Image 1 (cartoon, rainbow, N blue to C red):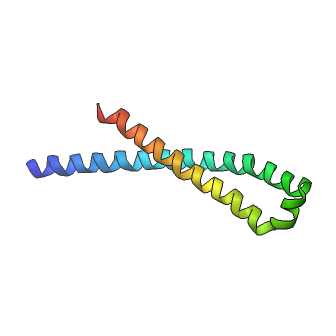
Image 2: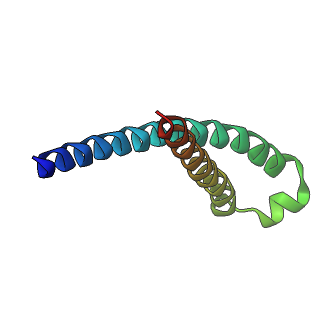
Image 3: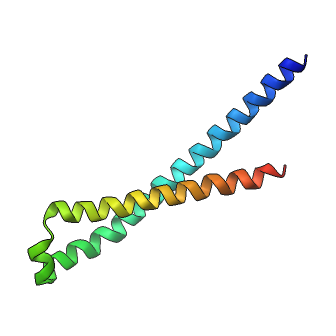
Length: 92
């Protein structure tokens, strides 16, 4: 009987962890989209207006800037969301 309780408890913990991860992925994806748009507009605008940027920032550099910001936003928001959700439910 104790083994069944332990397995049920483990299944419940696994289900909760999957839910927390999914919530983190969704929040991170939303943040990445917002960060991409918020970064792409000024990056391309500066590329058109600034002589220095026109000379030194080729399309690959611009894409690297945008993707770096999007990746950072994704991981930061996903991590914070997972930790926040886990903390809220750890006291229950």
